[in-house]
Length: 167
Image (cartoon, rainbow, N blue to C red; front, side, top):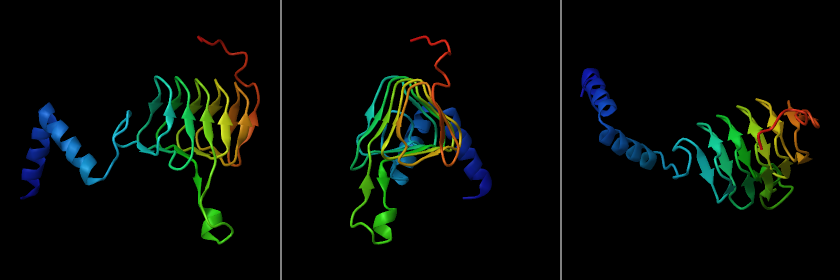
């Protein structure tokens, strides 16, 4: 098969919804992607507790395996975000004999910007924003209406408290 044959095949797939569906199923199987309520290129591991009307962007990860992740209603999680309960660094250097796992809870109406990491032992209050590129490791309890920025993360308490809210 030459390049023009491959391009013709791709064009056929693009024009036929049934072929698109079959191709998508083959890719999910080939890449061993798990089915989830978002998109095959969102990686969900374990059984996170998901609220209603959540958006999760492509190439993001929600890892609740062996731990607890709760994502409230109306949250928006951008692309390339990692929400991960597992921390294996102490096990790998011989300090512990198992992976540490800490609970992660996102309140309602939380926005997580692109390229963020949210690690275990982090609770983010409702109507808060995690700015793009922020790293939260053992973030503790972050109050509602906060803006969280940077690496290491800095919390601006009440940043959004005076913003008009629809709910």
